[in-house]
Length: 533
Image: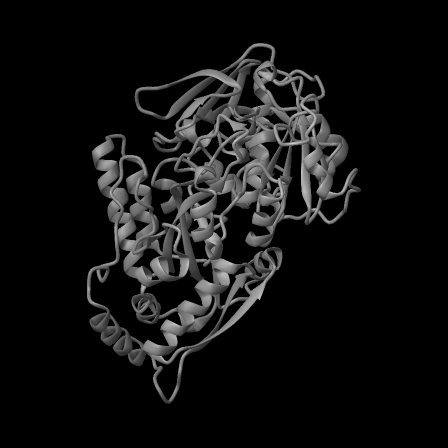
């Protein structure tokens, strides 16, 4: 969700011809290269692993780069570039042992110092990575991001070519899972030195994953080919991957039905009943560790009042939203951390079980106390990225606000890139976004509200919250850590820094010729695990 490519790259063949490179369909050449066609939503914001921040970016980057670890089919960490790892008894030191003979896609040796360089670039203020604070558990990371210490003081070192040592400020049982995140990818130092920020462009990017970036036609597709220098290249059964970019869910469905997509990124709500009736064997729906929300811009004085924020949240009928508007299995969200997160009990707003009539009555009183009412209605703009689901959701919620509280919510649908630019410029009132966990632990959700976290897009600031989260993160004993994490979420929910609306489910259409498909709560699947036949 950050820096964008602006240069357009020529396409070798029109989109309709992509089907010719697929296999297993009628009329397809069985000897043609096996190219997986993946739907991937709107354009990624960046394919620089240390700067990309959108979900669409991460999906591509996981194919191009490999961290010290990767995720298995159940979203648990397993060896990646590192064959093994160990930790100290106090949980503050980790040692990752690389596989011998690793190479970059151009054939250069891949060594431990490349992973250290990647982590240093991630936290370097000059990189301006929105994900820098994800690794703030590493010694000195926060001070480096704040410009208080040099990057070479980061608690990451390479005592030899095959060992990456990481020292932590507090215990982090999720560290192995975090190292699978694309932002923790290694850095090809020679490319960065020679090309600067251009090093991530197609045809120039040197990576270490199962595939290599070849081409990016913005608004259309991203093409990657098999990396013969990947350590496990012999197990990769695909010749390449094409990520097809669709801002419109219905356009993706049309492409899927036309045989131009093997795996869809989403399933259009308006077509869900038809899909269940006609494509049931190809439909995959499963829980996802992701929360859809409306965020307040805390730079706007009208949103300083927590009672006003609570009122806006209370009157939203999330059950009606999930069952009548969304209608594909999403769960109403009365909290922030989704159900199903490892070793955690999801927390909820105190009004979650109250009748709507009593919620509306309290909300009207809160709004009146904030200075708004029939003679002075609260008004603001709700901005969201264009798309069927986002428009339907915004219309429904605005209607609930109007009916219950007389609130005038102006709706503004824009392109996703424009939305992110508007949020970064603070040129929004309320905005629509979602947050997906980067690893299977509650901290990946609770960290979002830390005052100094780079992706805290509402700009929420709370010393009690920061202190509670810090205390929870310092715990080694699992039960005590869980108890304090749950307390921290409750503190945040009382303050209403945003409005969670629903928890996502994974929704994909998968062609019968795709072999090896799997679902997990992280909605992470690697192309290298799949085959066409």
